[in-house]
Amino acid sequence: MAGPVPLRRWRGGVVPLLLLAAAEWCLHGVQSDALAPPTRVLASLWEGLHDGTLLGASVQTLLAAVGGLAIGGGLGLLMGLWLGLARHAAAAAALSVELLRPLPSMALAPIALLVFGFGYRLELFVVAFTCFFPMLLLTQAAVRSVEPRLLEVAQVLALSVGERAAKIVLPAALPRVFVAFRLSVGIALVVAVTTEIATNPQGLGYALIAAQQALAPERMLALLVWVGLLGWGLSAGLLALERRWFRQGAPA
View 1 (spheres, rainbow, N blue to C red):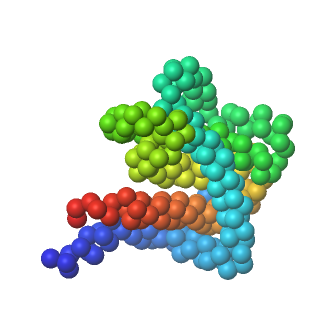
View 2 (view 1 turned 180 degrees about the vertical axis):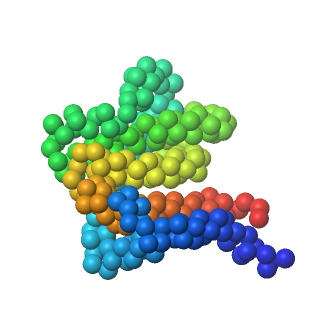
View 3 (view 1 turned 135 degrees about the vertical axis):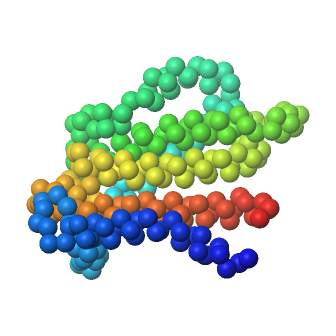
């Protein structure tokens, strides 16, 4: 029964390959400012990787995404632990969280541009703001789902809030917190690219705008493919870590 398993894994690629073949056939020999056949897109992708421009733009985007995630996600993790353990603090902060959480992150970009100017600080602020609330809410929910008996043990042992968080709550809630982190990584990448498209002249987002203004559809689509590959690679890597760390004892 081990034979069909690899076939099932590749079955999901059949439809994309058929769509690519259809696009190649339909766009062959067509001159367009918006579309390009897949072969030209792949050639442009290889050219960008070979001359280093694609990797350089990727480093800029990933630095902003990872830095913003570290700031916003770290603060959201700490705040989520605190609000999950301290019910009175959670009740007091609920209105502020519900008022700020729906704000679109890109609506803050003009304000951040006035405060920080162009560059990494602008992008770090927007990404950090976006990642803060998912980490806060999901961490708070993870803490609330911890087995109540564990918290009763902490009360019996007279542990402080910090000791309860470090020794009991965080280890118990860590699998769900890691899921929140994995989701926040994808959000950080999306927001970083969007910020570069809208306001910040650097990274993959700015390269997309430059390709669009130069009427180079093969380069623009190659950048889109690369962004998708980056997001897929990050998600797949984190999912593999999650399975390795938290599901080793799960039944097959």
